[in-house]
Image (spheres, helix red, strand yellow):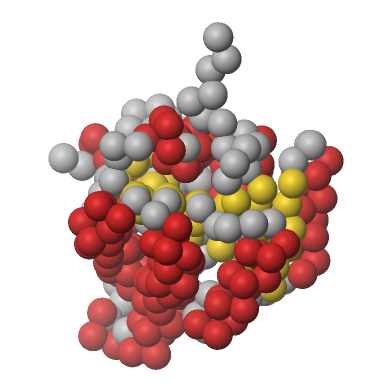
Length: 270
C-alpha cells in the first residue's frame, strides 16, 4: 500500500526568504515531496540559483520578485503565482534577520539602543516576516478553505538571549501572532504553526559563531556548551518539520504549535 502521508504533489508552496540558507533548505524539502514551490525575494540571482537547484533535483519551482514589507508587492506576487503554478496552499514565512545597529555589544547601554534600529528589526521579522504574508496569502487559503501557514520564529523568541533584544522580541511576537491566527482560522481550514530553529550557521551569524580559522568564538563555544547534542544544526535538519506541517494528511489536527529544532538547547534553560 502506498504511503502518501507526506505527499505534497497537490500543493503550491510559497517560501518567503527562500533565497537564504534556511529558507532555501525548506524550499528544497517541499519540492522534494512534490510541491510546486515559489521562491519569494528581492535578489533575482539568488532566486534563480535556488530554482535551478530544485529543478536539477527533479522538482518544480519559480522565482517571484517581491518585497515582504509591501502589501501591493506581495499581492502582485500572489496573483502571479496563482496564474503560473495554481492556487497557493502552503506558506513558509522564512524572511527575517538581525541588524548590527540593533545588537547590544557586551557592556553596552540598552537605553541608548536606537529606535530606528529597533523598528527595522521588528518590522523585518514580524511585519514582513509574518504579518503581511499571512494576510495576503492567507486570504487565498481562507477563500479555498484549505492551507498551512508555517512561520519561522526562533528559539530567541522563547528565551531572551543576550545582545539580540530586538530580534528576540520580534520573534516572540511572531509566536504570539501564530497562536492568534491558529485560533482565528482553526474552523476555516487554515492551520497556522511555527518552527523555532536553534543555532544554525548561516551567512548572517557566521562571524558571531566562528573565528576566521574555523574555531568557535567565545559565544559559539558557550552555545555548544549549552547544547546537549554538542553541535550546531544543519539546514537540512529542518526538512522533516516543514514537510510534516505542510502535509495536510500528516498534521491535519496540528495548529497553534511551535516546533523547536535546536539539538536540545532549550532543555538546558528550563
